[in-house]
Image (cartoon, rainbow, N blue to C red):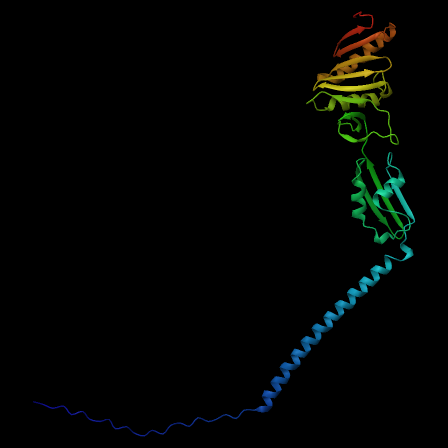
Length: 281
């Protein structure tokens, strides 16, 4: 039987290295702190000066604005209003909130335009500031072509039959009444008819028309006061129908029967006439 003997390791004493302690340079540390503090102070100072400059400039601008918007040099003395026909000059100025003596620079152009454009008579408006003391208001009014009834009230209406404003005594205009059948829209035939009347190409004028009616998309009725006759037109070919109307009208005039005519229906190349004495031509 063999026996193993464990030997002990011999540990040698190895001398340890001694770490050298580095000395701290207090002057360098203090210099770094002072440098950082200086940079911070510089940044804060620059920021403070910037804010102060902005505040000073803002107050300067505010002061200058208040000065120029109150100085009499910019007082409104020249107010020019163009394009008004039914709206009076004073009425437009009042609607826009503009009056002589107001400071031109303090006038809010957009607000003046908005207030004037709110009028039912105004189609468009442009306001221009003219320094140092002027203002120009250019108005385009809606043009009435007819009178029309809405809910038992009489209104002015444009060439498309759209209502403009209620009829009033101070703005009364003598115009023919436009009537439409329920569900029938005012078409281009009415506009063509009025254009021909305005060009004096028809045997009667606007002052003779008591009312017009669009009976359907292709048929129109006109009632004349002098002579008192109801004219119906086939609007499928309106220009040809109007040419036929002119010929028939001239023929009745030559025969002395125009004042006796009660009704006529005219289409291109043809016409049916009814006289007051129940005679038909």
